[in-house]
Structures are given as structure tokens and as C-alpha cells.
Amino acid sequence: MTRLLLVEDDEAIVKSLTEFLKMEGFAVTHVWGQSEALRLAEETEFDLVLLDISLRDGNGFVVCSALKQRKDIPVIFLTASGDEHSVVAGLEMGADDYIAKPFRPRELVSRIRTVLRRTGKGRQMLEINGVCLDIERGAAFKNGVDLCLSALEYRLLSLFFHNKGIVLGRTRLLEEIWDAAGEFVNDNTLTVYIKRLRDKVEEDAANPQIIKTVRGMGYKAGD
Image 1 (cartoon, rainbow, N blue to C red):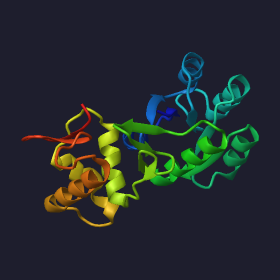
Image 2: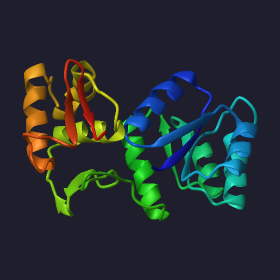
Image 3: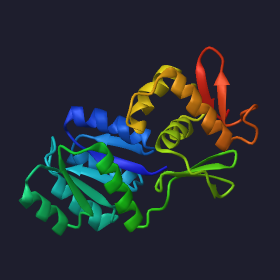
Image 4: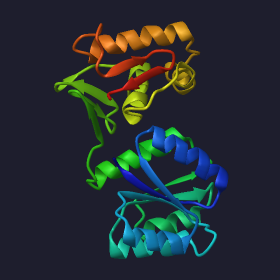
């Protein structure tokens, strides 16, 4: 799993972004300021750093410079909208990319994956019983064959794989996937999509081993 260090002092951004990134399959560690970021980066290996410029102590430029000198960790700056000076200064220090606030979380995820791909940080793969989820490519494979999932099917499978062994209730599944189809997904539609997904991923859809039903509670992936 790709490990991200989020260095940001806006509590609202931290909460929403951390939740979203975890749902996308990233392991996220958060710190508020410069000293914490530098200490943690020395103690722990991270694949990429999301770095705000204005911090509770110090600033993002110092953090970026130190990280690039010591470990050359990929860095994406989170900048104030229209702050051209900060963007130029960050890139000159070696930052790999930047994104202006306010930003769309999905655009940030796309930027993260592009930087990881460019810097050779490897692919994110999750696997259960011969079915592999390639997070970078947004695709799923069974015994090496592309399952050609729809956007909603992929989102649903991703939820199960990222919560392996955890029971997911129908209410939570509906809340998480409805916008993947671009329209509201009701309870009956969810049942249809789970059946379609089982038909594609299971060896025997009548006796599912990957997406299991937990009576009275919901579904879970694997054991």
C-alpha cells in the first residue's frame, strides 16, 4: 500500500482528504507542521509527501528542501489559489508537482498517481483469491484477465478489497458508491450490481468466496 505523509494545518482539509485518500487505497499519516514532518520523515519511509506551504510552525519550503536533500521523496505542494510565486519557488526546490486550493480530491489522486508512476514508486495491487485490483490503472483482473468492470462495479469491488474482512452494511455501500454511476443508486440496484460483480469475480457465484453475505449485517470480502 502506498504510504503518504500529509503535512497540512487546515483541520477541515485534513479530515476530508484523509478519509478520501484512505478510501482510494492510500495509507495516510498526518502532521501539522515543519518539525513533526522532518522528524517523521527520518523515522518512517513514505512514498510521497503532500505538503502545504503555510504551516503551524515553519513552512513547506524548508520541509521540501530537506526531504529532497536527504531522501529525494516525491513532493506535491498544496498551494493557495493564484499564488504564482509559491508555485515557482516550490518547483525550483525540486517539488514534483503542485495543486491549487480549493482542489477536487479526484484530481489530486490523479496527480499523486502520475507522480508515483513518473518517479518509479511502484504499483498498488490488492489481491483476494486470484482476483487482483490494480489501483494505479483502476482495473481488476482474474487470473491475469481484465474483468472489464464498469465504474460502479470497480468502485464497489474497491470498497470490499480496501476493507477486507470487515462487514460493510448496505447503507454504507449505498452512500459510498451512488455517485460512481452518475446517478442515485437504490437498494435494489445495489443487489443487482453485487450479483453482476459476483458473476465476474467468483469461481462459483452461487457459493461466493470473495464477496460473502453476512446475514442481517451486509457483506464482506474474504475471511
